[in-house]
Length: 445
Image (cartoon, rainbow, N blue to C red):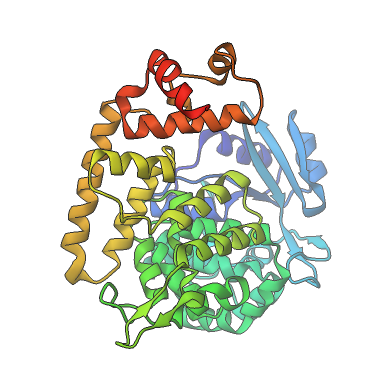
C-alpha cells in the first residue's frame, strides 16, 4: 500500500534515514491518508533521540523534550518528530509518570490508543500495521490496541476519544471496547474540563452528532453531563411531541449545521424541561418556564466545561429564546422579535427553531414549517428594507442627544432605547430630524 506523504515530511524522513536512523509518519495522518481524508498534522516517529534529531536539522523547537518530541521546521511548516517510546505507569489516569525511549517501533505503536491510530509508514518499508488497523478501517470500527481496560486505565480521555472518532469517521465501536467504555466511564473524573470540552466539541460538530447517544448509553453523561440523563428519563405526553426530552434533543442535533454554538444550543435547549414538567388533569405534560431555566442551566454547564465567553453567551441566548415563537406574523411583529432576540442571533434562532420543529410530532410539522417560512420571508423583507433593528442602526447617537441639550448620563441610554422602540414600530421615523424634533420631546419629558 502506498501513501502520499507531503514532500517536506519525506525530506525529514530521508535526512534521518541518511544518518542511519529509522523514521516513519505515524498515527492519525496515516489513518486519514488511507481513508482519503486530509490530515491535520503529519507526525513523525523515529529511533533517533531528541538530541540526535536536533543535531541533524538547523531549525528546531523543543516542543516536549521530556516526551521525546522535537518540532523540526522545514520551510514555513513544522513537523513533530518523536522518539520511539514506552510510557511508564499512569498514576493519575492521564499522564505517564515517565517516558522510556526504545529502539523498537512496535513497542512504540502498541502503547497507542486505537488500532487505526497505531500504524506507521515510510516509502521504503511501506505500511507497518502490527495490530490490525487496516482491517478495522475496512470494517469501520474503533478498537483499542490490546486490552481496552489497560488503555482506558492508562488514560481516561481515551474513553471520550473512542466516541469522538466513532462520530467523525462514522465507525462503530467494537463490542469489547464499548463494554470497557461503560466500565471505565467513572474515571473521566480524572480528566480536566478543558479536555472534555474539546472532545465533546469535536463529536458535536462532526457529521454524526447523533453518536452522542453512545455517550449516554455507556454512562459517560452520568459523569460529565448528568443533566442529559434527566432528559432521557423525562417523557413528553403532549400533542406537540412523540419522544422523550432526550430523544427529541438527539434528533434536534442532526437538524442544525456544523456550527459550534448551534450544535451546543441544540444539545442544551431543553435541559430545563425535567425540572419544569407538570401534568394537567387531562394527562398532558407542560414545561412552563423551561427556556429560562434551561438558559441558566446552559450557562452553568458551559462554565463548568470552561467555554470561552463568546460561545457561552451565544449558546445561552439561543437556549433562552429558542421557544419564543408566539408573535404576530407581520413586519412589526418580526421586527420586535428581532429586537428582542438580537439582530446578530436571529438567523441562528431560525435555524434552531426549524431543527426543533423537525424533531417534534410529524403530524403538526406542516403548520410549524409554514409559520417558520413566513417568518423567514418577513425577515428577508425587513433586511432588504434596511429597517432599524438595533441602536447601531438608529439615526441618532448619544452625541446628537448631548448636542440637543440632553445631559450626559444614564438618561441618554433611556432616551435612545425609547427612540429605538419607536422606530421598530414605525421604521419611517428613523431620521435624525424626526427623532430629535418629534420623538425627543415625547420621551424626555
